[in-house]
Image 1: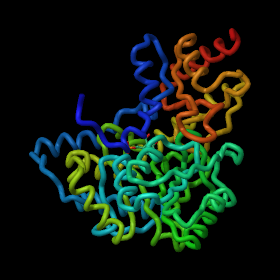
Image 2: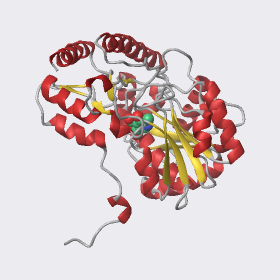
Image 3: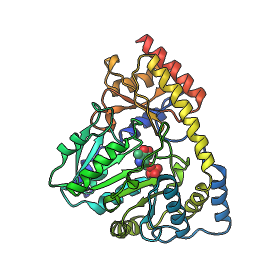
Length: 383
Ligand code: PLP
């Protein structure tokens, strides 16, 4: 017998998405609408810049916060694109993806028993990382309010122990975008009840119908906002592991203590690639247009075949209701995989309100999307 493990780790389930995809990996001829990843490779100029940095022997650690040139480029980018202003010297840390950003943010903020409000369905890493940081998840079900958090529901969840709320907009898995009016309501609640707002805006560039409004750009939100963003999605750089945290200096100085011991810094070649990637916004817009075209086709067809699907306003996911089939989301996903060889993610893995839905990622080649639609339609007819 081994000497045992942390009690906390025993309370954390392994990722429902990963569990499902281990199953997919062992099946043949499957069209995967599962993993949330661009189907484009990283644009060539960013790859070339990384190659060039390696050729020049630039292979060292960087400062813990990241290369100052990269932080400057990020500060200029978020100011220009989203109107949020952060100083590159003391208000930005470059992290190993937004994933690390979420982890160190929670560990920087939470004391044992502190509560974090999480509107759900939501991205799968928040709840376990809150628990690992000693906090308590207070989930709100958004499925009855268009998959958007509302003021009343948040208000009812606030207690004396509320330390933060996590917002993910555009949302994974629903694709919904929190409108400015609701963001303002949340900003007022945060100020009146004195809690932090952790804004995961990793899909900000992938906003289709209206210009994206960053929580960090709203007046008066700066002192209690932690803005998270990164290169994985909009810049098609998932494998480079690059994200960033922007927040007041008092937060950044503390978060840096965890980052410097647990990660030291983000990879230097990825940081050089990112500086270059930020010069190439046209290709980001081209990719966005391509996702938008696929969204329109895919969601339109799902609705035609009777899987009611709200039009997602951002990211590259849609969240069709499978309630009419009478199956649970896990049963539906397993049967669809087995009978139609199409992989989707059961909505139940995304928390409260996710049951009755499945997540489909449409960042998949258009020919495969069309074939997946045919297979789903045949599957529904044969049932
Ligand atoms: N936040 C959200 C909402 C995501 O959907 C993902 C990845 O799917 C991440 C964060 C993790 O991103 P990264 O690759 O930057 O760690």
